[in-house]
Image (cartoon, rainbow over all chains, first blue to last red; front, side, top):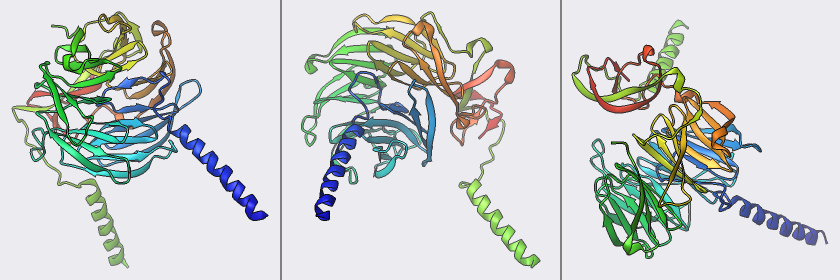
Length: 251
Length: 179
């Protein structure tokens, strides 16, 4: 009898846990209330919290009812943290030598999950489904590194595994939308790749854009920053990306 | 006994020293001629308050942010250009949010989270022409009197030019400071 009650109780608890997990997975929210930043962002906002990375720290702020912030936690990290990206209940930090994953099911206490190390380079990260896309760029003081895209399977967050890599010229920011991956390559312009089959990345086209730096793909419209200003493109047809407008930089 | 205390002090000193100087301190020679380093970005008193003012051209655009119909473009260390982007073929300038020192931003539910001077602010932007401050948190590590990275020459801050709201990498002539 008591075993039965205990069993019932377990079922109920398990059910609750499943529900709370689902709540947690709403981290980035598709409710339209949260916006979208580029891949070089140092702020990531969820429905309830703001996560901010500094060169050597991760800070957690709670969003109060009226939108005000309260600082609730801070972690010291190794110096070299450059970007942050939140998806579901995961945080992905791009650092000079790794992609670090945190579980934010309990947002006040991000739990370190894994670190995917690579060459020392500059490396923003974006995530879609079970894949993470990291670009690595060499620069002056980090000559041993390489210029490439790495696609990492993060289905098991404890054990990120590289699926493939793709050579690039000088990658900066990047963005992913469905099968399309947009990589800013500075003076080499904008590179559009088809990543439908991550084992076999295909180049769609390179567009000559002046010093492409970062992008936000947004439902068929790409927002890109470059030397000339902030340009927007229609990418509903990936083979014929069309410039819509340019907010120019003052001459 | 004295010996023991001395040993302890020596140990403590060693531990402290190793903590403070993970790398040997490097004493640069001055002057150094033309060298790459950090230069302070100053703000005058009138540039310090948060204010929504007339739109202005992009000069040094930084990070971008897209939220509902708005496109936000950071102007490095100055603030945020606000565009109505309902029609991406014709983004329409709404104005400029003066936010000295700003480089970062995110929006949730009509609240803008951004760095202002050495603070992290939450601003209600449901009406851009009437921006209201909801919270302001001091960030002790965002102290601006020294540049963000170590091992670089920098131009010593000059109080008479205003307060330092950021640092930019550039070529310096005989800098007198090093960190």
